[in-house]
Length: 316
Image 1 (cartoon, rainbow, N blue to C red):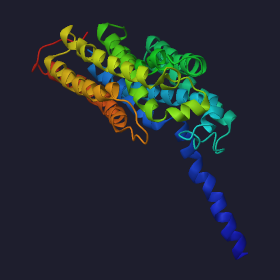
Image 2 (spheres, rainbow, N blue to C red; image 1 turned 90 degrees about the vertical axis):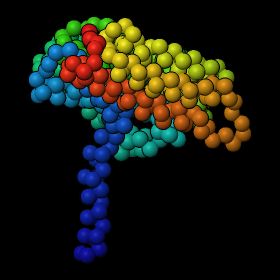
Image 3 (cartoon, one colour; image 1 turned 180 degrees about the vertical axis):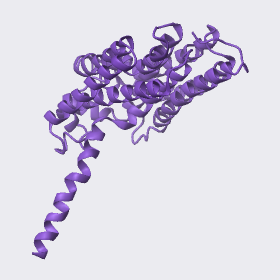
Image 4 (cartoon, rainbow, N blue to C red; image 1 turned 60 degrees about the vertical axis):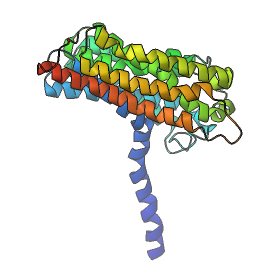
């Protein structure tokens, strides 16, 4: 009897302790954090006011939609993930979650997010949210990613919607500033993701995914990383010199993006050697995440200072 109890107790406890964690892992919480943050910044930087409960609801819907889209991504790519060292331990290829359960989980998250956004916030915000889900799941995951090295370039739009949605949740319309915020994330995505792809390209090559370093090689990828990073300098500052943000955002955007471009220079000009640890690429990838958090955080600070009358400028 003692032996039986010893065997059954851990076996019964293990699924209960890992089950919710596996479903949480399907939502890619590390990625969702950045999505939620940029959506929140779009909401806080928008002119006007929103009831805090409704504001929380809007951000929750963005989080659920992002998590649901990520789960759909893992459902569709489960066989691909199983062939890649970086993703082989994800819940579906590791056998901890079935494909059908992942699909149903994703459907509930995405459907609920759009419905609640429409009923609580407005149908324009809900429509853009639905488009963002479709863009990531169908346009990027199912169509672009397995077919073209431009998958990240075009697919970057999938992650660029949150600040636009947050802005629309407050204002009910689309103006210049949220379009610029969309563009910033859209053009930030290629150098951010290609920096990662440079040091995991063997994984993509083995799995047959046509990422830029695999299809067009190292030299072309490095040149494009540098070109996009340099283009980000005037683009990130655009809300300031077009008059929709204040001087605090303008100065911070130039400093932050200038450093981003500076980190991209050695990545763009160097060549890999045998046994290369890819330190410049890893450094650029790590900073690119911090960069987006900082840039959008400064946008909110700039808005607060404008509201307090400390600096001039008008977000529109």
